Length: 155
Image (cartoon, rainbow, N blue to C red; front, side, top):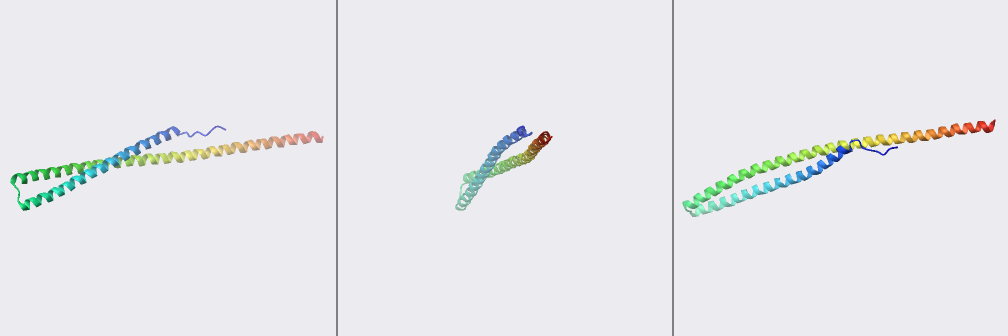
């Protein structure tokens, strides 16, 4: 009997390689998302600190130049936070996209594994049929050989 060969082995191997690649891409996308979130949180923290600092100095009294400088700086921080929020959203969407691609490939691999199991099961059934037939042929041959031998010795 010939050796078992999965008919979709090449596709299975391609999907496995694709899964490995997507896992790396997903990990990178998740890391980029976490970094973007950290950057946004740092900017928000800085804005909060500088706003408190501004309010404290304003209560004590500050020059127009300082007031203008703080206003421009705080406005710039708010703009950076908006840009960071856009970056966080973009990174989140990219991570979700990679995760969805990974889930799809994982499902495809599971289907191929089930097909492998089905084909292997059919292969084992064919082997069993072949072995059963071989045993039956041997038994049939022995039975016919034995019956031929008994006629010769009996006559």
